[in-house]
Structure formats: C-alpha cells, structure tokens
Length: 110
Length: 111
Image 1: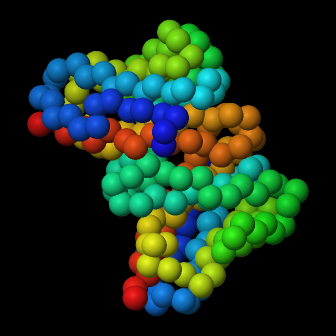
Image 2: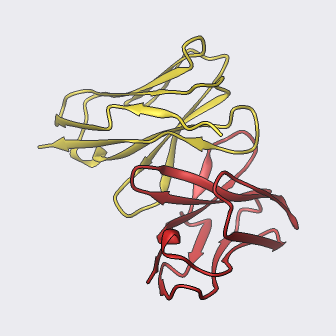
C-alpha cells in the first residue's frame, strides 16, 4: 500500500513564526487527515479535509488540499513551544485502512 | 486517550516467546486497528478489525495474529517474538469517516 511522503523531515523555528509542512501521495487522496504526536505519546487527530474541499481552518491550523497534485499542506500560525511535536498526514484512499506519511518533526524554540 | 487503554505499557520479552498485547475501548467503535511505529518508517498497519470476529491484514502482518471476541477488546499476538518486532505498538479506533483515536502505545522490546 502507499505511504505518504512528508517534507521537510525536520523543521526548527522560533516561537511566533509560522510552520508549514507538506504531504504528498502517489495515488488519489480521499479523506486527508493530520495528526500530532508528542514525544512518547499516541497520535492526536488535528483536522480532516475531504477530497471535495480545498482549504480548511481550525484555530491556528490551516490545511490545504490539491487533489490534482495529490498533495496537502499544514500551516501552523504563530507557533508556540507547545507545538513542538511530530506531525503526520494520513489518508484512507477511500478504503478502511489509514496510511500514514513519514512525518515532520517540528521544534519551536523560545 | 481516555477511551482507549493499551496494556501493558512496556514489555521486555525473549526471542521465541509468545506475546499478547491488549487494546480496550469504551467508545463502542466498530473499527479497531493495530499499528507499529519504527524510526524511518512512520506508522504501519499490522491488522485491523471491522467487527466482532471480522479482521483483515495490513501491510506488515507477517508474524502477527489478532482476535476480537468482543466489541471493546482487540488483541494482538506475536506467536514467536523476534528482535525485528521490537517496536512501539499503537491501537486505534474509528467512528465513521472521522479521525482515528489512538491509545498511548505499548513499547515492546524483544531480547
């Protein structure tokens, strides 16, 4: 099965800056989801964007979806130290199996 | 997450021994999943269940079996543990087309 590819693999920014991470798949995207994982913890669902949507907002999160390019991006605005975590995209491809991207490690420094 | 409990949280076992990990949910979700997480590979699906006694394989199912005799419990068994199965194992549930809910993980070390 396909695995999403994310870039960058690691990102280090200063508090208050925006963080952007990208995700791409080789096959069609259905319900693209983003998750956050703090060190040593389970994944937490952040936001879901459907294939008929182009942009979605949730608090400081903005997600875009380009189905023609099979890609999505996650923007975190005005980042905080508490945003330090790994971020994963994931998609079902229309089935019952959620396939994850390789993840972006975000570090927000004070 | 309060709705999913994984046990044990940590386990060290010897090569060749059988190991069972347990996932318990209180949300009455139909779908349950077992993933493993390894550096450089992200999360990979081992097995999943779409109902009591209904299970299917994921992308890395070799060496693993699962059982689901009740809606709330999904068991993952390593029949004969190997060092390559040292990993962090996550259970997840899903309700409809919404996001998945993950447990806190089980860190398994096979020595």
